[in-house]
Length: 260
Image (cartoon, rainbow, N blue to C red; front, top):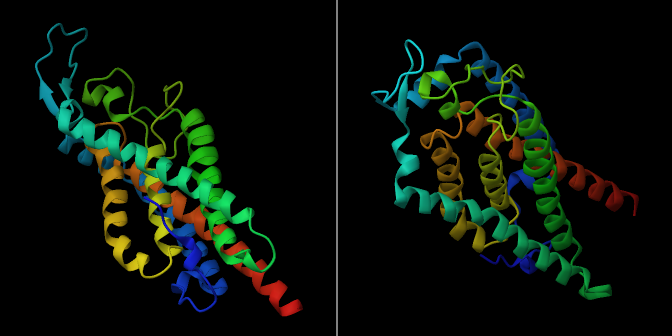
């Protein structure tokens, strides 16, 4: 999917979130919402367990290793069609990121009057939010050190580890843990692109991008790869990071204009 950001100019009608004050307000609201949801999932961990149980199919244990052992599977994770769909969607954000890198390089090669500053800035925000959010915060920090086991790893769903609530770093998962979902974070980043896609592409692509973004996160829950809180907070984390960078960029740009 190649998005032509070259049509961005001052005559474009930007979504409300792209204006400096609105972007800053959006960041504050999303940041507070993230922590409120984390508190909700932490206080009511049964939400995660109930949703995960909807996709879990108990089965008799072939050779019970301990009394009360629970065995079973998450059927969607074994369905070849669902696995193929997940594999396709898994690649989408990174294919888009490669396309945006190529477009940014093309933009940087322009000089003088042909250089589209607004286009370059929005591409930089998009790629910067991907690196800061899904890559650094989610995959290199939270997933590496949170210690939260995935649903299929806990003893309530056929695994061997204890359940820990969202936000707890007391779990026994060693690496690539459940909190938060990296794929959901990448999906949330993909959704953020809706706010910087120029018209008329924005209107045409908003619905399919949103649908794919939500489905990517939902599949991780259905597969037993993440709890609902992991998917929701991972998805939302990208919106927080994106709105923060957008607000910072727009505020800096507005100050430069006022100084000139």
